[in-house]
Length: 243
Image 1: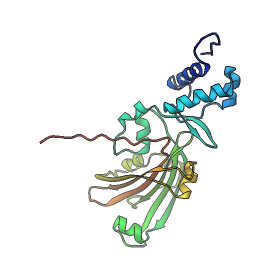
Image 2: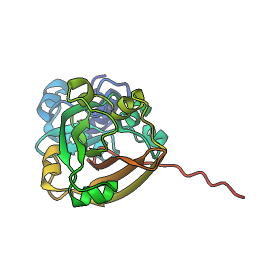
Image 3: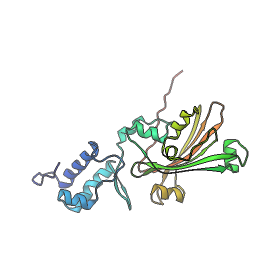
Image 4: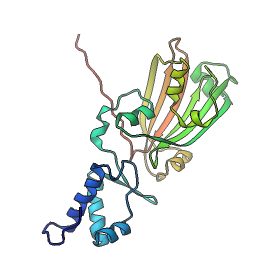
């Protein structure tokens, strides 16, 4: 589509329609950065004011989101979030809306349980645990995960495991969960998390803490997730059954 300079419709509304079409038809993928203002000015032969007004409209309509110091990225289609369920791995959440996530950073180490972790897992202080830290998202970070794992198996420190789905690995080793507990809150995340998510120090993140138990009621996974609130929404459905 091109700008029609003979059309009475304001140029910024024409440009808004063109940019919106690029998002809806998949030319610009969700979570990716759009061309810069200057690139749009040169391509569509309009002023910078026109470009900014068009982008501002799409930001208001939740098609785009501005990332200071980074650029403007395509926001998720809100309607596509309606199928999110309460207990899902991040990998499966992305699959549910037809998006393939990336593991941007990942590190696995063995640690000794301190008093806090020993109490959480109901184990002796000093017992071995695994600690898996990951940053995942699309072309930009969406979630920082700090996961502690009970040593039900040996977790390999290789690229396949570090960049793959944790839950897929567990099920492939016949490790299944019987019960989950989650706590969700809005917080100002620690400095390390803000740096990993590349968000402003004054922004608020979605904190999602998960406890995952096996059928012997042993805690296997304890994960603290921090989500970039500009790029993630938490949806759940509750079925009420009247007795």
